[in-house]
Length: 120
Length: 107
Image 1 (tube, rainbow over the protein chains, first blue to last red):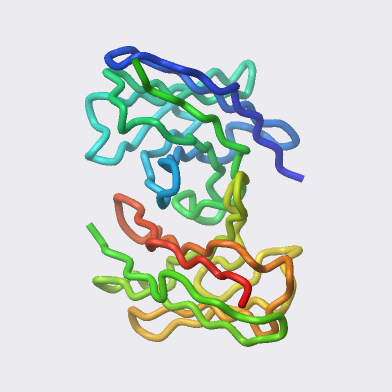
Image 2: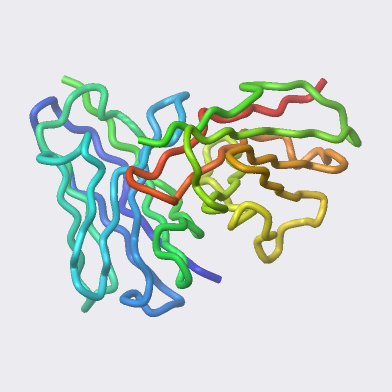
C-alpha cells in the first residue's frame, strides 16, 4: 500500500513563508513524480505543480510562479513545498500526491493533507 | 487553460439509485481524465483512471465512459458509503484542472 506522510498543521502570519513536507514509504521515492494540490476550506481542488524526485526538475502552475518552490531530499525520500509571501487566501489543506508510473501527470495516491492557516 | 465543467454541482439520491455525474472539457483531452471521491476531512481517492479504467480495489459499481470531450462517472447502485463529493481531473495539458465537484447527498 502506498503511503505518503505529511508534516503537521501550521499557523502562519501574512507575509511569512511555510514549508510542507511529504515523505514516501513503501515504494521507491525517485520512481514517481510528486504533485502538490491545495483545497481552501469548503472549496474545490487546485493543482500547484509537480517535482520529479529523480532529477529535481519542477513544473509549477503559472498562478503560483514566483511564490512556490518544490524541492526534494532523496536521502530521506521526502518532497517539500515552500510557499512564500503568504496571504489569507492561502489558507488551505495542502496535499502531496503521487503521479502514475505510466503517465507522471496522472495523479494516483494522495497524502492525508496538511492544514496551513494564514492569519494575523 | 482547459476548463472542466462538472455537473450537477450537487444531487440527492437514495440507496440503490443509479447516479450519473458528467464533466465536459473545453477542448480535447483524449482520455486523460480521472475521477476522485472525497469524503469530509479526508484526501481524495481515485476511482477511475484513463477515463474508463477501474482503479484496483474500487467496487465495480463505479464506471467511467468517454465520448469526445464529455466524460461520465456512473454509480450503478448507490451505497451508503458512496455519499461524498466527486471530482474529475484532466491531466492532458498544464495546468492540470479539476471539475468543480459534485456533492452526492442522501435523499
